[in-house]
Image 1 (cartoon, rainbow, N blue to C red):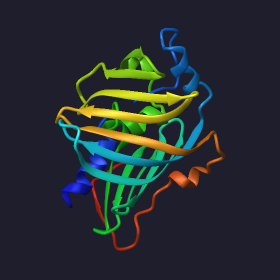
Image 2 (cartoon, helix red, strand yellow):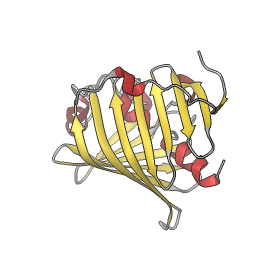
Image 3 (cartoon, rainbow, N blue to C red):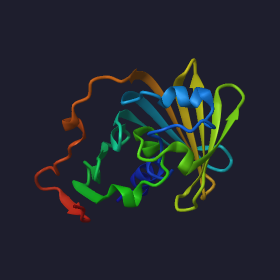
Image 4 (cartoon, one colour):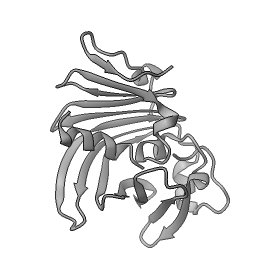
Length: 205
């Protein structure tokens, strides 16, 4: 697989999150996750090296259905699809006609995708600190992820950006637009059937 494509998928899935909020969770962050059932948005993804120079860029649209379901469709520069159906994580590379399937709970411990889709209480996965300007710093409590910290930026209560710093010195920045909160999303949107002829790698229940 192209190195760029490998990194695109890994960075999205490199950073769990939230079904319930503890009293210690900052009010602004708790307000965003309270009653959040579904979410959809366009996204731009940029990868910056340790000198803050852009080394990758991609874009697409994502859909979230809590708990544990999401779909991220990359449209540029390559067509890729990452789908979590609640049990399995499917990664599809259209150009290579290859599908990778894994058990979701074994892969997604503390990631940007799972941060939004909500599998565990936020405060159980991260140490949380409120910063100035509607920003929040989330540091994973366990070191079983490549992510060292997540920074969430809000504007008037709406999520604008997630920046994930990793152990390789890179920072992946997801910027969101055309956000819809709690739209009606059919469960079928999060079902994945490997296309005919695609090579399927991995096993999952």
